Image (cartoon, rainbow, N blue to C red; front, top):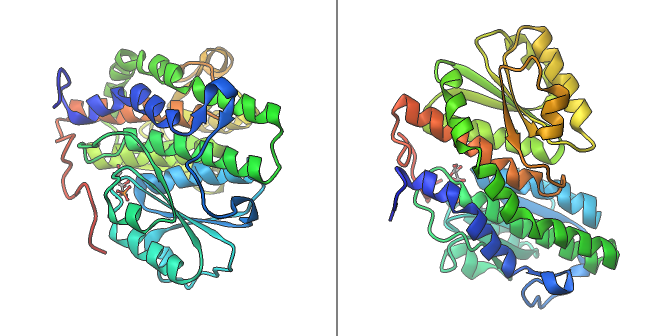
Length: 364
Ligand code: F6R
């Protein structure tokens, strides 16, 4: 039921504080300041390599997870689109963990990649939203997201719930590998616990984001820029805009701009910059200024401090709550989802059932 919402997608965007909290509840023990994964019947501390395989939005959640696994657990991570992974004869040494991320748990390429890894001696973990799905059945370690049924074809709440599970898994692996002290684990848990409130604070800016949508509607092309763990959010923002508004959009790592895409910049190509305060802020802002120096029109998504420092000269700004860099990818999902949504509504497209797309891609 859509309730008071005009579309399932909007309802699902607004459900995120609740379903992320629900998901975190099964992966954290906040009172003890610990991460708590389901019983694992293999020695996770022996894992020395992680292979992540997924498609679409779930793949972008995997890209964020790569930053976390490497940063916290110091385990090397490979990540591939399932359709590429299947046919490139990947090296799979014993002792590896193969991690599959899927809302539906039925995506044909991801499922085939899972079976390939199983046949090649990998431990199989699956982050899935449908507990009765094929991937859930095949996994050695099932890590469910508790997003509830996702009806809108464009994935929203499943994505942030995937990130919540992956953050907990990265922290758990780091603890088991002796890479995190008790204090560091407690600190990670405290940041994750703040996520639902931060998502609510992000959702409070819905009207402001709707007001910016008309600036994007006339565009033929849009660029999204981000750095570090927020780079995949730039990719996700571009995917959301493409799939529901049919405006061409590309996500780039902000440092890559000057290696080619900056040639596209003029006043007709809006550039959405994701730049939360943190260690990478200044770097991203200097890339943003390179865009502005060439007449580019920027929408800056940052917190109050970031907007105070770099907001001048932007076409528009979208204010997010000030959050720890660990949870920024979850929080910054909200403005890119809402921006795509409002642009699509303004264009009059079929938001919940975009043309040419199906909710579950069960053919290769
Ligand atoms: C984008 C979207 C798709 C899916 C992709 C994978 O909004 O919904 O890109 O993310 O088809 O689907 P699952 O996660 O079910 O494997």
